[in-house]
Length: 455
Image (cartoon, rainbow, N blue to C red; front, side, top):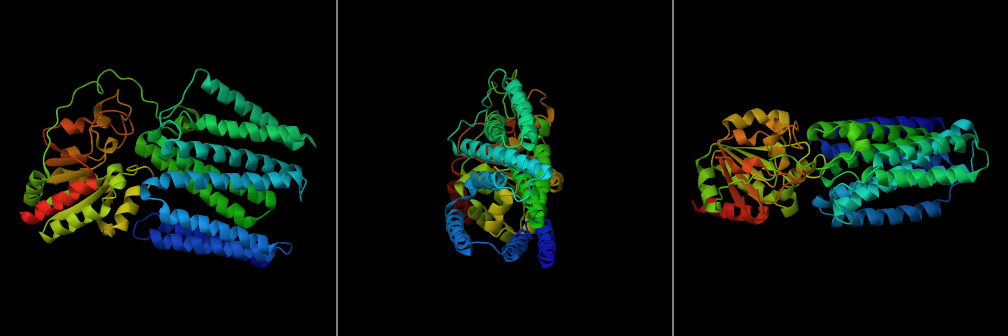
């Protein structure tokens, strides 16, 4: 057991180093590898420390899991990563709840503390399971992406929460009465659904981050149930890092964490003005865009969800390389909530081998727009909407945005004039210095590259 705990400490050190390196695109891949090695050490240490294990069953489970994981890793596109993360969160929470439930029915340590940790693990794990699959359904289109609300919803959630507390207490002190435990499981599953359905698709990145934190809390609680230090450490790290990420996401989207947990986050309110206002836009061809870029010296690329959908990361990198060969300066502006999950744009651009030093976050890049000749906005919408600065009636008011409107010229690529996740028009599109280049991002960039070569 002593060697097992030493192995857990080593694994914990590797987890922390891995998380630290994940904070930068340049070191993220090595951080992922380091953390994976830490998990391998923890798993091997756990298997070696227990004598009464059926290694044949474990091997079968590992083979099945490896096949499923490899299949999804190969087949799932980057635009579907949020859905996959949501499912993984759900499976993690569900696994913790099942292990804790097994311990409830066959306790190795029938103490009050053990019963309490079982109740916490089952509650959080089950909530995470159902909530994550609702989040997956909203992102995938199986469930309406709009907030689903009804009268008395918050009162109902409050009553469910009170009942959960009472059932949890009865589960701990109620002796052999299994009905309390079954009620706890059922209500935990229900509140996972009722807490997630009122959240709109625009705020799913925040919800996924929060559910990730919940899955870590469930794992840590299960670690206390099993008296396994490795599970406690890894669960606590996931829970803490998920909560920190959720806080970052809330700031990036100007959301309150309390609203994410308890309110109808993402519910678009009808506002006087704004949406009903007709915006007059000026459209341009790729030939005109090429001439503008030829005359520019400093260009900032602003990637958004449209870039991810079109898988246009390689096309924009080729254009950036071409412009740099012409002696121009090219930078990339990365908003923390661009796309559908944190780091979405960083991963896409890293896949296209865009130099890490050109990827600048919001605080770094915003001062650069004032002397920028051309800002190229590729599928981004709400994160570049100037209404966030001044329109107090706007649902995105107060959200930190990229100051692309301060550039001399803004080239915006969109397939249509449809609004973004927030459901409002972007007043940037009607500015005098803005030109709209409509079409699929990849096709448009391919044509733009040809036009640049012909100049």
